[in-house]
Each structure stands twice: as structure tokens, then as C-alpha cells.
Length: 235
Ligand code: IPE
Ligand code: IPE
Ligand code: MG
Image (cartoon, rainbow, N blue to C red; front, side, top):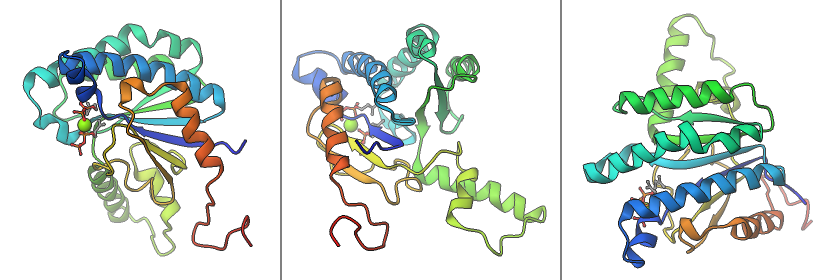
């Protein structure tokens, strides 16, 4: 099976899942967190090297204080206790996003989980938290500008060279999945997605289980990736 090295998931639909069941939106996020934990283990077992997930966008601060607070509390809880399985499995957890305006206790939980798992080698779980794709490019461009001021020669600067100015130096995304039925990127990993295959599903994230994930992998295997060239399969 041809495995994508880097898979990304826009984990959407938690709120609608809860509302449909007559529950509070925060209940949907709790269910979503459980699914994320299972999927991360499964993806790495399947041979995926990096799994990036969109957990909270810079724009999600537009939501009610109640929802934002409950999400942040859930994230702290997961990083502190629930991610023990992920750690034991040897998965390295990294966070992508801006620090401002995250709460002090959230920043502390981020530091702890990154520190605890930093030697793990089995695979990488990249959690995008207070993350924006345009923001990542802007932040990278500012870092690059500083290097140029300090004398970096950019005569032969290539698109591959920009990866080290992103939040983490990860491989390009091969497959991106969006659950919840919306057909958009919502400012997710714009630089890294340039040649990825897209998989959209109406399944709401709390219902997106291992077999749903495998469907996306099978689809990926049958895509004809050309990267601007000529198809090897169909020529
Ligand atoms: C995705 O689910 C999780 C976050 C954005 C934090 P939503 O909360 O966006 O769920 P819907 O789209 O309202 O159903
Ligand atoms: C994208 O979902 C962000 C996350 C999944 C964390 P949103 O629910 O925020 O996106 P829009 O508002 O539908 O574009
Ligand atoms: Mg949504």
C-alpha cells in the first residue's frame, strides 16, 4: 500500500454532532478529543510518519468565552493525563501556532507535553492550536527577513528552503482530510498543502473512526499524483 508520509486532518463537526444529540457543544469537543487519541495511534500504526490536526484556529477565538474556555480546559486535561497512551506508544507531540493570546496554564501544558515526548521516535503528532496558515507564513517571512538582515544570501532560495521558517520543519502534506461536510481550508496549513490530495467527508469528527480513516487512505492510494509532470500510471 502506498502510504502518505504526512496526513493532516481538519477535525470539524464536533458542535453539530453534539447539537444533533441534544447535548452541549462542549460535549462534542470531548467526544472529538477521544477520537483524536484513537486516530493518532492508528495512523502511526498504519505507517503514517506525521499526523497534523487542526484543533483550534486563531479565528476560533471569535466563539463564546464559555466554548473557548471549555476547549482550553479540555486541551490541558488531555495533555496532562490522557496523552499517556500516546507517549507510551512513542509518539512525539508538537504544537504549532502562536502563543498570544493563549492562557498561561495552556502554555504550560504545551511545554510539558512537548518536553515529555521530545525523545519519542515512533511518529509525530502535530497539534495546530491557536493556529492560522496565513499567520504561519507571515511569522516565517519575518524570521526569514531577520536572517536576510543578518546577511543570509537568498539568491538561490527555493520553496523547500522555506520549510525551516515554518513553526516546525515537517514534510509537505500528502493527504488532507476534512470531516464535517464543509468544502474549505479555513486557513489551515496553506504552505504545506500545495500538492496534497484532498479528502472531504460529511462524517462529523466524533463519528470519524479508524475505518473512516482507512477509506481516506484507500482513496489516496488510487490518486494519480503528478506534481506538475506527466502521469506515470496513465502514460
Ligand atoms: C471543530 O468542530 C472543532 C473546533 C473548531 C474547535 P466545530 O466546533 O467547528 O463544530 P461545528 O462545525 O460547529 O459542527
Ligand atoms: C476549522 O473549523 C478549525 C478547526 C477544525 C479547528 P471551523 O469550524 O473553525 O471553520 P469554519 O468556521 O467552518 O470555516
Ligand atoms: Mg466547524
